[in-house]
Length: 330
Image (cartoon, rainbow, N blue to C red):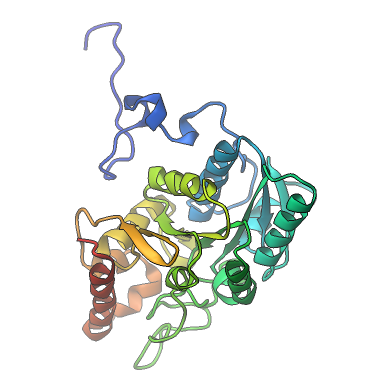
């Protein structure tokens, strides 16, 4: 190479995108800005490869950028709260409140009402929780927040189980997955089919101003959807898939790849909706069979060892196929 020239590096290998340095300033992510908030800073105690820590940093930094730093975060009990705020320490660099496990939507609504009563209409509220605090324990409070159209963006970081308390099943745990409460035993091993909730679709059914899904495999898309949400008022919902190396039984360096496979297989559809209607869906670029997504995870190992469970894998493939049809992902 000619002396005096630095080699060009390409980042996010396998993501079909190039690094921020090859993009114009207006197209770069918030994370490429040295003046970003760095809302969730170093020193937290998340596991290596934690998808939730990655997503939370991008979501709140994007929300802070969208609001000019005029934002308050409400955080339910769960992994995100526990690893980021071990008493008397905190890794948060934003105005941040800790709620109970199940009432983050109600607390967020209360904060928004208090700000409105005090005339601080320029201060926005983001409430956040894991799937346990969203899909299960906090579902009633969340539905009430949607029904009242409270001016809150609620973010669910979905790692598909109660990871903080020992990897128990939640209503977001996929069928056939092994957890501490859905063991891989018997003729129908793992989590039963036909249980749980598809919360993004339930949110759409509430007819609120904005609903979106995203993954940590496409951080530009995640930041874009946060900006879209913060540009609106009323109740908004963002559901982010965040693989958990501990609960899923995967290597820490596989987090982003697994999130991408979840989307590319069709098991996790990525879309946007406004006022009860789906308005956009992220197409699958290189479709893969669900087996490519299931195999790297030890929570699905019983589907391949000692005998292949083609019947169960086929049912999961049918779920992915249904998502592809429902959202027009191809």
